[in-house]
Amino acid sequence: MLGEIPLLSYTLRTALSVFTPEQIIFSSDDFTLLELAAKEGIVYRDKRPEQWAQDTTSTQEVLIYLYEKYKWSAEWVLLLQPTSPFRTAQHILDSSLELSEETEGLFSVTEAKDLDHSLREITETGLLVPTLPVSLSRQSGKRVRLNGALYWFRKKDWLNAGDLHSLGRVKPYLMSLNSSVDIDTPEDFLWAQFLVQHQLHV
Image (tube, rainbow, N blue to C red):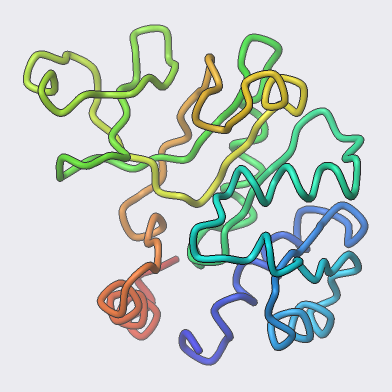
């Protein structure tokens, strides 16, 4: 529980406040989480096969599995990960306004404070490109890192690229540090609890 709400419910409730239940697919190999999704009103609850629920299973493999099973009709797809509880409906709506014919994807970012694999550079043309740590000191653009909260991608471009991170023209959507909390460790969870308790996540 994060505050008085299950961690997963933050993402499910946000998604349901923007999309219709029929537009959302929730996938998990955990029956408890699938039952929670049902209580929250999710229609398409996918019990992921064991082969796509391993620690080594990549996000791309799960996306391919879901696409082949459900054959999404939407031009644009949004991936929401449940470890980003402070992403809001407004974030989704505002970022959707940035989607265009000139881009293949839009990923949420926050300002970078450390050198890590998720660092990206915002170019003068407003697109995201990978940043090599060795060249950071020579870069003139704003340094940002992926925060994992929003991954918009155009279906046809994603299928052609073969992977989310191989998309060629990706725009950034900048989020604050507090709204960018991504819970991957016990320390992340404690920080998120602190933000909730002091109402600093809104």
